[in-house]
Amino acid sequence: MKISVLIIAHNEEKYIAKCILSILNQTQKPDEVVVVVHNSTDKTSEIAKTYPVKVLTLDSGIGAVYARIEGIKNVKGDIILSIDGDSTAESNWIEVMVKTLEMNNNILVGSWIKIRGTIVETLDNIWNKYFCVSKNKRAAKWIWGASFAFWGKDKDYVLKVFEKSIGMANSLRLSKVRIAEDYWLALFMNKIGNLEITNKTSVTANSKESSMIKEILRNRQNRRNGRLIRRFIEENNL
Image (cartoon, rainbow, N blue to C red; front, top):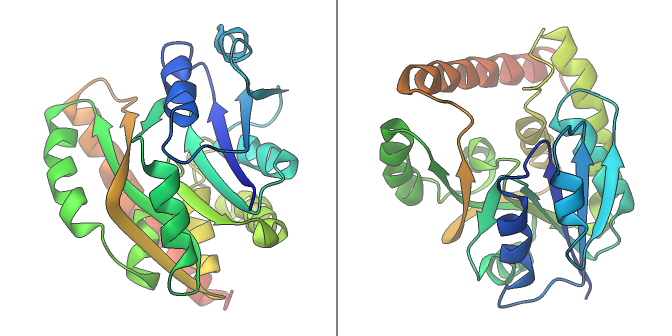
């Protein structure tokens, strides 16, 4: 069974090496690692190319969703895992994610994500570790772009959801850089199969917010967007 890992990165020269190394040094090795460097103006691409990974450059589309679409089109694994370029995976990440995906007829799984940043994230990390463990509808809000996995046979469906999420997010006037494609994916995937979150492994992501106030405002915006997305799906019988 072939395992692919997709890394998306936008101006991540500070973190991309650590991200790639965390994937290459897994207890269960990936068969393929694809890095999509999108709209970057720094040395992310040059650094990524020094490692035994496939590097793709994307200079169109604003937001992570376009990089995810490009990457998924180019991976070939029976199982596909996704992580962001500013993140690092715990050494057992692939092993645990694969085992979780193989359980309970799951079709989409995620893991605990630790955020490195302000005291707000530090407190959230404690909460997240013990309360992220859930399944199906309750799990949807815990499946974040920095750590999810699905079966390669479902690739076309995942691509379809990501592509549709752009238009749906535009209808809701969501920010182009915060389309919340991961949440759209979780909600739609749960309509056709099981979701599950595990805290037996983790990914550590670096916060883009520079202050507690900005982080609090971002969390508030994310919760608002989540409500809008759920209501949109219900009202349109999607």
